Length: 398
Length: 215
Image (cartoon, rainbow over all chains, first blue to last red; front, side, top):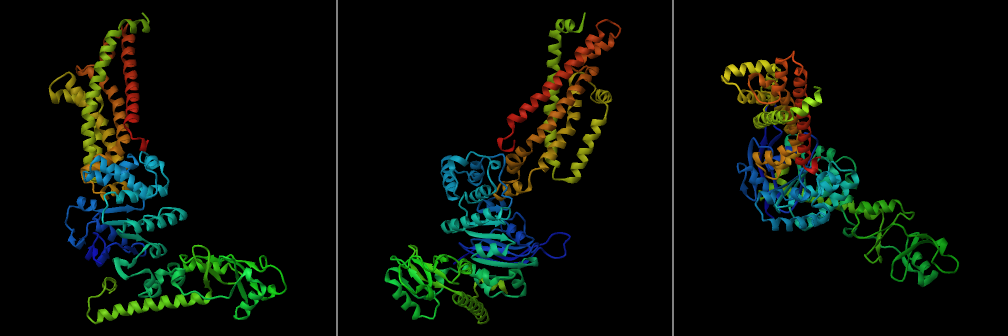
């Protein structure tokens, strides 16, 4: 994996301020990843971002884009190679949506036909209908739609790099979550190198392939994957910044398919009461899970309810807590807490029984995540001490 | 002869003088507009220069127009339309410069930043983003100046300038004659009507030249 962006000893001094806003920052951004700069207000994260496309000119240091030193390149040409999305969106209100998106292609002198084709493609990419929206003005759009157009404008000339400064910060929680998810799906298709600034650690954990946690002067406190940052925070600053609930946040990143499911006594309804009783007796659980002909979970039944005769269709409790393997462990935990049995049933895409998740499964998942993160941190340290080429995250974490 | 009869009788002369009046105002406004907008663009990001220019323009506006005409007469050494136009240009500056500065400074910083972010240079940003967004405010300044100049131009007759002032001053000269009041009234009403028409014309121009997206 090559580095798309490299910042070397990057510094920004503002006149009249004793300490630099950004102090000799070294950071490398690998190609095709979303790197989040996150930290408390005033830590210099936005200044750092804006120095990459030189909206803010660095006082000293070097910015490399695809290996090329662009610190003193023509800033306008540099910016046409870098998509830029800001919190206030900054659409040009007197221009139509089409013209807004076409800003960079027009500056690059694309033909009319090529621009028209690209506009169609981009609107489809951000999930908006070209015929409806290309001729509209920004004021006729909702906040979420405007930010989609902001993203489309940044992508217009297919730049390798996108800079995003709190892009979803001004949206209501529901729109924000929707746009975050859409953006992650979009990134799955386009695979850009993205530098993303936020002050919200939860957004950082959700959106980032890597997170750089910054303290004052844009000093890197930790630069690693969200999983590692959560399970093995580098120091007290990081720990405090992540806040309470780090384990829960970690569970939000892990998927049900990644853990080994617990087995559970099951019996088919059609096999009758005797079979269900036998299944229950041969285990140390208090409940048996009844399945239908397609092995889909139907009822939870206790031993008491299995006495007597008759059909099993209506005995026991309905199975409500069901998740698929793509669900997060937080989702599974949430379902579990709402279940009378204290167990979540995992089913495949067709609804057939795969296994269950109970508290022990969750606990061991947390253990595994913690151990893996510590191992990664230790390995990195060992490699650095052994004098080998250290990985990108270790350079910055020093 | 009552006023209406007088007006009908002198219709040709009234129309001719009105057209002259409008012409001299528009020439002054055009030159003042170009200079005023250029000055506004030059100073809007330089606070010290901006204040200095606005103060000078403000002082110009406080000079009584009769005094201004007398001054220009001696400075330029000529009478007629030229010194009148110079006076009109000077008087038009304050509203135009001030509104250009206000309009350009009022453009949302995020819009300017994203214009930078897509790679627009200084001039392109000004011409295709900042100025079009400031335009409705600039045009209000031009409109205010237009109405102001219509009144100032009426006094230009005193140094041989063209326009409706001629009727007003003719009325003053023959103050004892029966038509004196009719003359002065005709000139004055003409000035008022021209002012209102120009005001309406600029309002319409603003509608027509402002993007639907910012209306």
